[in-house]
Image 1 (cartoon, rainbow, N blue to C red):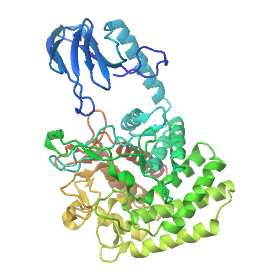
Image 2 (cartoon, helix red, strand yellow; image 1 turned 180 degrees about the vertical axis):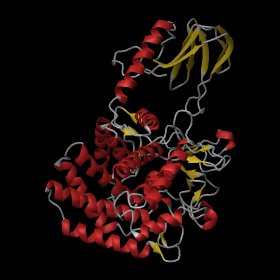
Image 3 (cartoon, helix red, strand yellow; image 1 turned 180 degrees about the horizontal axis):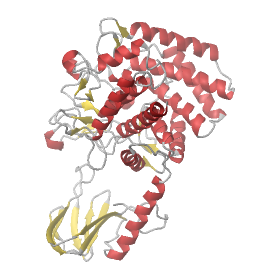
Image 4 (cartoon, rainbow, N blue to C red; image 1 turned 135 degrees about the vertical axis):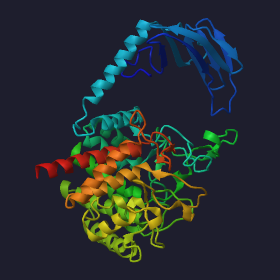
Length: 523
């Protein structure tokens, strides 16, 4: 575990502690520790000391403190030991300052005290959760995971703490998600606010507000940043690494940072609208930035872009992007009306209505009887399940129901759902510019649950289907209630793990399914 909630002057800051305890009988153990500095591009020296071992590289040093005897093997250290019932071994890994040596390993009593303090911190934090519905345990696990993915100094929430875990074993769809996407903003705020975590929502909004003022020379917003606000996320491949189970290349950085993705304006405005409604009123300076963004969007929403899925096959007129441009205009108008802010209301309303009419005309396929991925084709896109969630269409609108029906069929029947799991789109067409296949998108499966839930307010059969699908999805979580980005055909976890977007989609689906079930029960 890593201690948390301690005073800044605490000597336990930045410590990673592993406790090994035998509850019954006797057991033999082998411990190995081999840091890989700078993605194993830097060599280092391992040295055994009186109280453990020191690993020294050109940029960073780590100390491993333990009372267990260690042996050195090149850049690694090892220990072989046996414990009897009630015995405990402690290993503490921490960064060292220049010239600092390993300190004495803490006692069992000291680590127990820090452990209890850490557990108490998490209990106190979780007590703020206002969710008391049917699926408390899984929602609590999701909330804890999201909290662990927040960079406390800035409030930024990373998409995932891992990089280059493959979307198919041996494939090349391997990406670095250790950054913060503006797109995640609306979903993050909605998820956190719905279950009572306004403090985290406030911190994230401060980070988001700062980014909204950092426009590019052409007026666009960068879509993804480092957790410290860093702009340059140049993508690199680490060719000296084999990757997880031979899945190459291993990538760090993310080339999507330079893409045009117009939908982020919708997510940004939706975030600000929710924040203004549930946390605190936004200020006049923030409004002026919003106003500039909306006026820029009025002039540029008709451009093609790379879309929510960050395709690498060229820009297109993605339906989801256009829909979120509509959301940006709609939320801007609502904010202006609610707060009596000065606004170019007539222009925004004309643009909003123009976007709506274009999506209804060009985004609809008479052949598929569904909204499609982009104007130039008939491919389905699970992102369109968001339409009723952002109030672009009513959940029982005939076109929405028809789209829901089209998506909620097997791939053999032209749909995107396989055994209750949802593909984001048909990756085998090659339109995304990438080779290889991918698994079903876990987040999209929860979007399907929520779309069915909302349609279920007037159709009990769809509500029943939503509940069954949600509870089946719970069976795909690991023992800690966590999900990877994708799920393979045999149920294996694929892609980066855990993924914030997925845990947020779970929270939203659980909240709305609970509420709708209660309404039906009391109605």
